Length: 99
Image 1 (cartoon, rainbow, N blue to C red):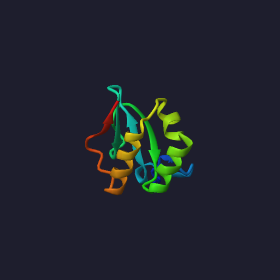
Image 2: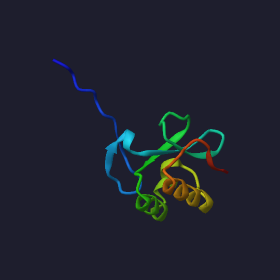
Image 3: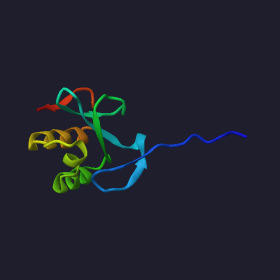
């Protein structure tokens, strides 16, 4: 008898739906003050999760739910950079914007 592995679930801050952690993009606020897209889900810092849909980023921006989740103000330039990276496929190798 083989035991099934537990799948961690997280809530998208945009649409408020639960998804498997690996299906979401983690946005992380690092201790150095950078805001990054974290594809691996392992970067150090406070994180929030978003679907890969641009509508969820728009909803999170409108309701300021990403700001509440990260516990910091997020400038418009960061939202614009996040939207651009989501459109490009969400490569999270570098910082979106330092603030």
